[in-house]
Length: 164
Image (cartoon, rainbow, N blue to C red; front, side, top):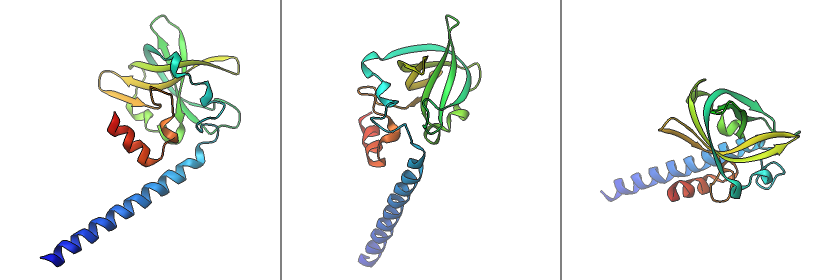
């Protein structure tokens, strides 16, 4: 009986160790596409948590964005606001938000939360959250301080989810 318990414990420890190493490897591999999106970068300093606002509109299309010269590609969205204004919203580096193409369709009603910024003379919306309908919401930044989730380590992301 004791032997079986030790065997199970060894197997569980091995699986957890492997999963931990795999997560770290995936995290490190994805970090290569973060150029310009790092916490504290010129781009991320434009995000002002104290200027947090909400927008409502219709999703026109998901777009690729390169907010500033030298940045890794990112994902954004063109949104048609209720007053007819077209807004470009920036979400995150492409590797972090690549799944958005599957959660949103042209014509979907969306709610986007974040702040306004000016980049190269263009007014853009730096999103911290986007919601499609009542049930599908994606978070990109901490609401309280604007820290990008893509800059957090896996264990920090787990802690963030526990506090959510």
